[in-house]
Amino acid sequence: KDKKKDKKDKKDKKDKKDKKGKNKSSLSTGQKVALGGAAALGVAAVGAVAVGVAGVGGYKIYQSQQGAAQDKSPLKLYAHVHSANNLQAADRGGTSDPYCVLSQGAVSIKTKVIQKNINPVWDERLEMGIYEKDVMAGELVIKVF
Image (tube, rainbow, N blue to C red; front, side, top):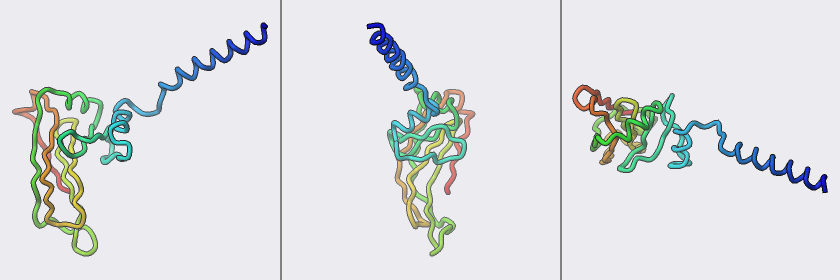
């Protein structure tokens, strides 16, 4: 009976250890959120902590954990990215695969990539949280790649 009890105690300890170990991960909270929201999506920017699919359109990129907090702000910045004309050809064959990135504070939003086009039309509505202090004094950076 003692041997059976010892085996059961060891098994119970192992089960507790396994349950505790399940919550440990090498991923940060932001990365877990990103992987849950878009499992097949890779990190699109150097140093980005999290990437998720935006509710309105585009991919959100959090430069730090502050980005997630900023994005939860009740104030929202809505942008309509329409198009670009006569972009520089970056690929062979005189075309390019352009996309646009809008950044404010610790949050960036990336549009979809338009394949083989130097006159892309995105027609995307993007949304991001913005702090009240940044409404008048903040800077919105728009880059086309």
